[in-house]
Length: 188
Image 1 (cartoon, rainbow, N blue to C red):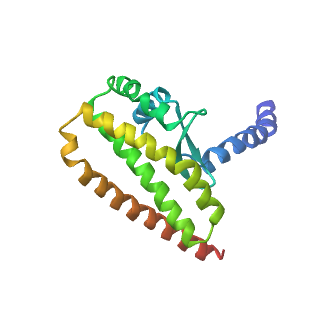
Image 2: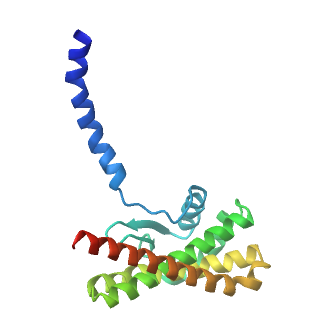
């Protein structure tokens, strides 16, 4: 009998306490772009050139940023440090990471185009001024180091970038259309 009373009094407290953490876990918006191994490479490469990485849950957008007040020349001068950080990883891991970073940049461009069509000018300007230039600079440094590490990959790098761009646009358009369809069904 005492056990039943104990269960009846404690169970609601446990469920209430767990409910909030479960709800946060279920509704949490986070990046799914990089794998866990790629996140390690991301940390090493961004740190080497005074960069940081983030995710904006409102825009549902991954981004790279210069952490500090460094000029483009100062960042570019740290390219050898990035290459040194990348030598710890296999060529395939580095190429996969590079291609995900190309996808990140293409996602930024797609988001700008999409927000422009929807006339959300504040977000457009924010991405154009804050995220895109830093991502392009980081990607150019990364690309040079990837080519140096794997000259064979340089032969088809432009084809790979074109394929990544097409696939990114396709999947983001599909995701956007699905979201619009869900909103329409909910009556929003």
